[in-house]
Length: 206
Image 1 (cartoon, rainbow, N blue to C red):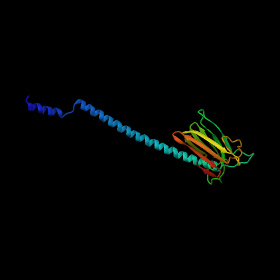
Image 2 (spheres, rainbow, N blue to C red; image 1 turned 90 degrees about the vertical axis):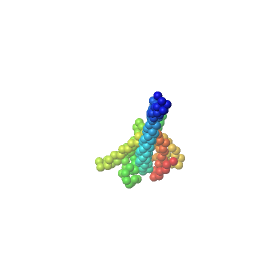
Image 3 (cartoon, rainbow, N blue to C red; image 1 turned 180 degrees about the vertical axis):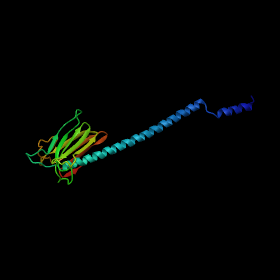
Image 4 (cartoon, rainbow, N blue to C red; image 1 turned 60 degrees about the vertical axis):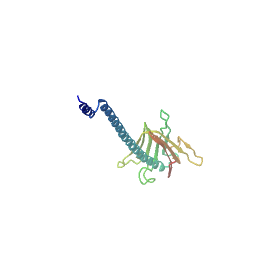
């Protein structure tokens, strides 16, 4: 074979790809595809977490507002009368607070503070905070109250006694009269703890 023929044959051979070049190209393409998919999936996961956080924060805001109204407009009660505030200090097996409340309040329906009284129960069941209530004067036209806030890991309630020398306490022996104020601490999975202090007629968030 002449020299010119050999050169043409070499040029023809160099126009294609070797097996090694093909394999390297496939590996690089696979890595790029995997990285792109991982980045896309991470974006989807982030969006899902943000949406879940927003949904959880929205639910908590609704429950927080309701509990504030219920406690702020609680019936004061009279000594020797019916129960208006029952606080049970409880703890779960892991030591987390799981208190429960039963209150008589005028803070469920409008006009707040002047409406018919309701009995409202607030308690932690497993990992769900539940708020349920019904009007004392049973009325078939008024639906009962029922709200749930999932993902709650602790629920702690303290009551402020009456008088100038009053102190915060985790129990309340006088169920026929209401405390002057209430302090609630709550923790939710994946969210920072929240607290709420309510005085009858006033509210502040520390």
